[in-house]
Amino acid sequence: MNLDFETCYQAMLSRDRRFDGWFFTGVTTTGIYCRPVCRVRQPRRENCRFFAHSAAAEQAGFRPCLRCRPERAPGLAMTDMSARLAQSAAALIESGFLDEAPMAALAGRIGVSDRHLRRIFEAHFGVSIRRFVQTRRLLLAKRLLTETRLPMTELSLAAGFGSQRRFNALFRQGYGLTPSALRRTGGSDAGAPLCIELAYRPPLCWSALLAFLASRAIEGVESIEGECYARTVAIERRGQWHHGWVRVSHVPERHALSVTLPASLYPVVAGVLSRVRRLFDLDCSPELIDAHLGELAADRPGIRVPGAFDGFEMAVRAIAGQQIRVTQARRLLSRLVEQFGEPVAGAPAGLSVTFPQASRIAGLAPEALIAVGLLRQRAEAIIALACEIVAQRVSLAPLMHPAEVLPALRAIRGIGEWTVQYIAMRALAWPDAFPAGDAVLKKRLGLESARALEQYSHRWSPWRAYAAIRLWEGEDRPVTTPSHEEVTPS
Image 1 (cartoon, rainbow, N blue to C red):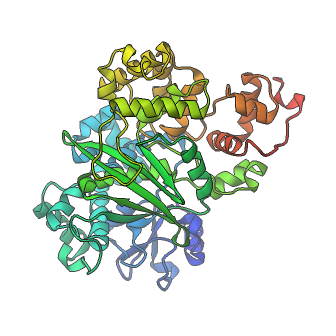
Image 2 (tube, helix red, strand yellow):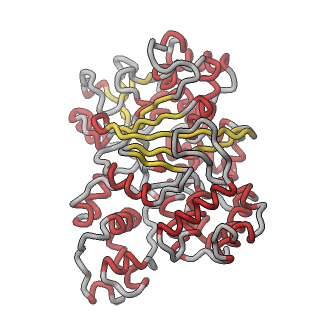
Image 3 (tube, rainbow, N blue to C red):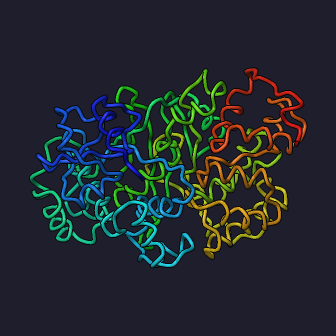
């Protein structure tokens, strides 16, 4: 990312929230780096340095501000497609991938060599992968130190360090003080649920997000009560599965979501927080997108594309929901999880079972899925996809490039183009995915063919996924119907 000094300095002076997470300010006189929204006295121009990432600031010798807390900044939403490999690697790192796998496995996951991954990552972020990982772990540990009462041994493991001794040494080296010196009184007791906030760039249309998720909630897996979303969780780390639940509520006055999770998920807290960010699309830049969509976004700014807590789960939802009503798909999926999901003990009311893993589905015969109500072709497609994921021939991780994933999905019998685009929208977080064959979208825009809708949709590129969500969300409201000339190929 190229940073213009004057733009960054003016954004810092105005404390404009739209720039929060886009850059960090290092102050040479204090050795501290801050978010552009920091409320401390603003530094003189000649004392400022600007960095695209917190890891770059720390590599340059700056320490994170204890007031604005850079570890709480919203993530950077990248639109440069040439950087998607580096972004994909960063997303996997943020979810804790390298806490249990070597660098070669990370490179293999995104389809490049170890050497090439290191080169493009450093070119994009300005720091090595090793430094990026260390900064991520230190900043997560800093959050857990100040916001929880986790015992030091559990905290160091939850943050991704191999041992408390290693954690203590790196923390002192990076921040100039011991972990115990930073820890403050208060927070949650050991064994009690953790509560951590995740920041976003405003505006956020929370009501639209909840309505979308509520209409598709799977009984036993998800629950929406009032303004709160909850779901069950199953995450693997170092060969061990961790089961639990997560509850998410909106804190609009702080432009954040409050995330609560139980002690059973302490070891995978990084992965849980990363998945929550994806599910609620917290790293997008709504003002940029809304301005591009124009009139389509004018009445309800800040609508996000709901993501996926798990890529395989989202793909199964999409396949099961082909050419049937949302309510029918919910009933099918509820029967599927009741039959093949793992029970969760101690979960809040309404939550009882996790969505079945790909490894569980891959071992089934099609008749087992047909018995819960799926058509044979869809049952076979779900099992085939599960087998591809287990064999690591297909990855539905966020920010995987569609050119690598979508052809593999299309090759599976029973997965149509609508499903492929829907998976790209929600599982891959591809902002330009667009299901041109969708009957609701054609009806909303008064178009008769997928070809006409595909052509018309290019006015919203590269944010067509956001346009689709808005059109689905506003099904009961009129839109301007295009003229025949607008959609006829030249």
